[in-house]
Each structure stands twice: as structure tokens, then as C-alpha cells.
Image 1 (cartoon, rainbow, N blue to C red):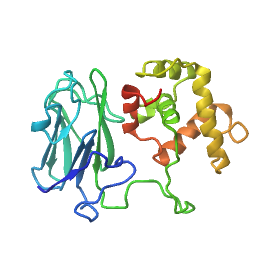
Image 2: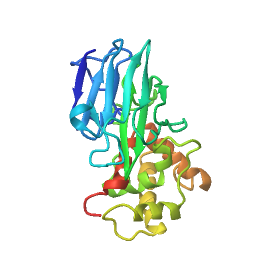
Image 3: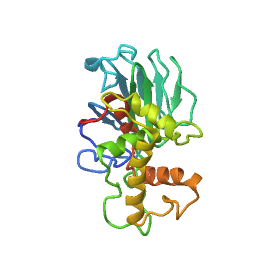
Length: 259
């Protein structure tokens, strides 16, 4: 097995598949990226990547300082033609669209992107990507310009949008946007945040919607979509462009500078 270190500042794997030794990764390469960096592992028989709290003895640190997370919480191993993830810790592991992976259980990883999360005293997330050998991750339509697809957001806007769309970012089944009251309550639980009201949260999102509409994005304002479709249309735009990515969920635990 050949291992390649991923720097802590590596962009979200949903936005871009990293190069391996300066070249596109071989098909089946596994990328695992946490808060403190990670590794890419080539698809060799018996290859193994360990995730957990005990930094010296695992490849990817997850849950540093959180005693609810096990020192070794997950093992990713190459088996035949695919990768398996095994829960070797105590707490369940969350994977999009699947039941919680309980201690001692394992499941196959699908090709492409998978955010893995563990909820201890706070939410911990590791991004996984099994390379398909195709183009880098990202949605590019025939009419897409040659600009960066990611829409710019302020820290405050990103925090509110993450709170509003957190179920979708977690990959929850039948995920829906939160109500404005639920969004307010989620923001109230974020460290260092001033008092939020549902109207303040809605106003922040309104500013984003108007800015996107002015740039030609359809379906995000009342004059271009039914009221009950606007939130879902906005969510789709932000996810398809990887403007919001699962690692943004960490903001709900860390907050943002300046409140």
C-alpha cells in the first residue's frame, strides 16, 4: 500500500479530488480527510487506514479531546475490489442514507464521496472519497462558465445556511430544511453567538437569495418559484456547486469569529 499525506488545509473532497504525487489518483484510491489532515491510500490488497482519537496510533484523527470518541473508532480496509468501513469504537458511526453503523459492524463504501460522522460531546466529521478515476468532483453543466462554481458567502451567511440545511449536510434520509424557529434554536446553541430571532436568520438568507438571483440563479425568489419551493431550490444550488459541504457542519460546534 502506498500512502500520501493530505495537508490540514486540503479543500473539501466534495469540491476537488486531490492529486496523488502530482497526478490523478488511480481508480479505487481511498482519500480520508479530517480536521487535521488525512491520507490517500492506493487500492492495494489488505490496505488499512485507521481513524480515531489517539493521534499517534491512527492515520486520521477524529474527535481529538472528546473522550466519547474511541482511541481507534473506525478501520477502513481494502477487501477484494472495494473498501469496507468497520466500527471499532463504542459510539455509532453515521453514513448518509444508511442506518447507524454500530460497534463491531462493517459496511462497504460506495465509489465517490461519503461524509462519515460521529456524534460525541460534539459532532465530528471525516470526509471519505473512493476515486472513480474520472474527473474531479463537482457539478459542471454544458453552459457552466469557466469560473469557480462556489458562490461566495460571508462567515455569518455560511453559519446560518449550515444551521438551516444541516439535515441535508448530514445526509439524513428525507432531509428537509429546518423551519425558521428551528434554525433560530440551532444558532442559539452555537458558541459565541449573539441572540438570534427567526426573522434575523431569515433576513440573512434573504440577502443570499437576492444576490444569487441577481447573478442569474433561478427559483430562489418569490417571483420565480412557489414559496414552498424556494428553500429547496436554494439548497440544491448550494449543494450542487459545493458552496456548502459537510465539513461546514463544524461551524455549529466552533462558531465563527466576531459572532
